[in-house]
Image (tube, rainbow, N blue to C red):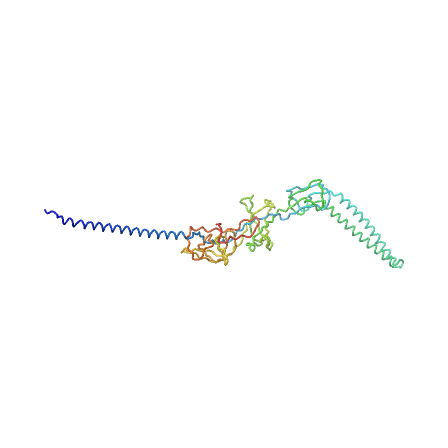
Length: 412
């Protein structure tokens, strides 16, 4: 068995050392390459994330198709079909009243009686003056006839006959004046009987027995209202004035009668807008044969407007008010913005009618920033559900709908 020499062992050691050194170099180069690649990848990811975060995030919605028929709710004021304040037409003291509030009355029914001693005496004096005037007129007439007969035989002068004729004419005029005074005082005395002017119900009584009555002064003695039918007055905004015409059906609701509606119909309109409020006064008629409704009440009037032109609606805060035109910011599939000019119709406050410019499938930005431009790249958040079209809110004092501020608002 042979034993390795010292020379062969010495040659193997340098070779092994070179292999270890080469392996270490390879490992070091690999670690360096991995570090460089990871740093480049991290920088690329950071740049990509920074660019993504720099994009503005927007919310979008799709235009809503307008309803086939419009529903409009406005406040209405209920009034009696006929209503009258009953004042005294003669002076005196209230002798007796026969009807109190809530009493149904017929036309010509006696409401109260006034004691008029002064007018009674004036009427007696007027009748006496009339009797005197009639006697004087009859005497003057007979004298005139007698002088005309004497004139035919030349027994009296023409001057005397003319004087008799003139005196007869003057006495006849005095008789007519006395008769007119008797008629005036007779009418005045008849006013001591206070009568109902039409069928209805007494809604107020403001006098009592012994009260001093001054003709045409003070408060009314009674008020009478015909409530078998009621008039309802509504101020319709200019937006709906052209479609609110006589014959249009409506329904009334009252807060004190929840769940119950009353049919009504437009009977006439003012045919002119109030220049201050830009509203049209509309009168409706509602049957009240059952006496359920009261004049003076507040009602919500639900109009059933005829179908209008098919159109889309956008939230008011999705419209850009630019100096050139109204615009909507539409986001495409590539997440780039396109500003489209739109034509608007009616303004419903929270939404606007769009006649042209956008389609039903467009994604329209809600609350777009004023600085947004066509071609801008944006990040789209979860789309919002299309807002349901709404009728104008109930108006305590009807007025035109207000536009949103440029660039949209925070309303949604």
